[in-house]
Amino acid sequence: MNKLRQLQEDSEFSGSAVDKSLVQFCFMAIFQSELSLAVTMWNNHSIRRCRDSNVPCGQPNGMFNFPELWNTRDYTSFASREEVDACRGQVEFRSTVCCDPVVCDMCTYIMAADNCLPPNTFDEAERLYKHLRSKIVVAGA
Image 1 (tube, one colour):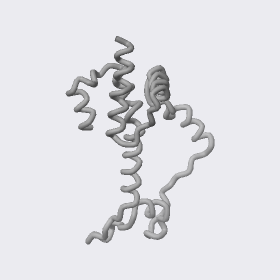
Image 2 (cartoon, one colour; image 1 turned 45 degrees about the vertical axis):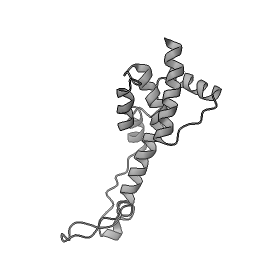
Image 3 (cartoon, helix red, strand yellow; image 1 turned 120 degrees about the vertical axis):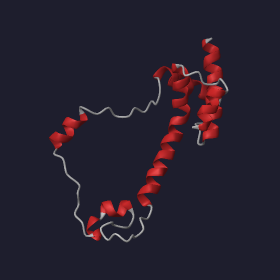
């Protein structure tokens, strides 16, 4: 988040719809990767024993998937096909396009033309953001 704040302080992020879409295009996969890593780390960390015997210890994933090992029951509730179908009508599934589709197309085109690779780190995402912004904002000016 400091990098994003720094972009704003350096006047490289104005808060415009284009800038927001560029941030989404360049950083969203990095954010998702970091969040997925945090989930994995949390679900696999060990909860230590404590004095209170009512508090279970172990790894959250194991505790959820094998409740019988912790002398508890499976609290999973199953839904009928009709219930699942009813929920599907009320859910908005994540799109494969993480930003405005027009900006996404422009970014994809520029990346291909300039032989740019998708970013794997925040530093790479920042460089890509600046590169794309220089092409798109200058072109739109």
